[in-house]
Image (cartoon, rainbow, N blue to C red):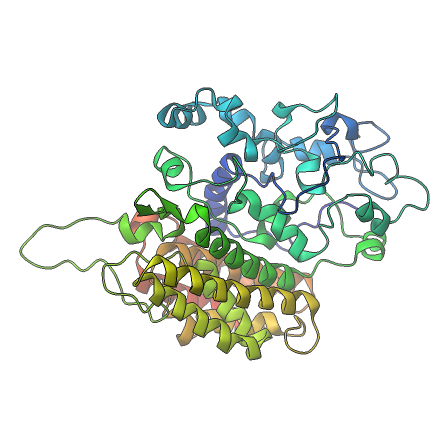
Length: 463
């Protein structure tokens, strides 16, 4: 019976505090879009079309092939798994209405700037489609008119469904592309949370593909699921997600979204680099640290490189031949920011190409970039090692790092390389790392690096 991948072990208490914060992001910026333009002939048929008791609308997950209670899980009011179904409703809440009023958008529930991610961004809509359903089945699985009548037929295959228009979410790059449309942004209307929207009250955007996938999973990975789609490789999903996030950020930054009037679009820059306390006193109060990965002048806002840091760590282990190129392109990109827009756009294109090559290598496996064996242990060591940890000078990169360590630990349990009991035994160390990024305004880089290093050493001892 297919239904929820689930985590192999529970999230730590400290981690749940951070996940609660991320859930706020889920509720106000959800993956509702697609990067590839779907053919106009495909129609979005609506959530109600999937809700029959012989389909996905049962009250219990007792189906023979799939759970069949997927809609109940999607609507679950008390867990992150129900966040997509609540996406439209938050527009009518106080915060949603305040943001819309500040920006002069009118009613948030009808504003195109909001609906691109708070509802399924359907082009052609069937009679049963309702925007108020929020981020529905087709937001992730694709417009269903071409496959809804055939995907449950005897002898139907996943490949045939994909050929008929279903999104192949089992492929890491396809999944990342769909999720990033709203969990980072796209060039389409209503799918980019710019600095003005955040200034009006929208939560900071944060995303990690494997973690958020597990939070939204409505299926079980049993034997027949594995036969049809294969087992989910959490390490590969995490690494591909990091690479795709870097490529998406750079592509948008190099395009029309990169500027706002005479200013750069500040959404792309590290929030805490500007939003720090200001001191006006006799003695200097230095509020920043030099970052070896960013050759930029002191006081210049840095591009948000949280995914670049993680991708560098993954590349050093899984694709060392590409790692040198990626790190060189990353440094060149940061340096170009200190020059001019023309230089930085060219550098962004080169770095995006390096990230894309890493995504391909991670997804393909085999020589040059396969994700296998004990690579998760090696990547955790790399993240906490001197070359990478020195780059944890700002809050956003540190949040991504602790999510990565937790995700990779859970992947080790899922793959059988670490027992549930052993992982539970080092939860206190992982909690310390989560606690170090619990509050942005209390973030201390040195304390975080110490906590992350301690957690990484404890994980390494389990190998």
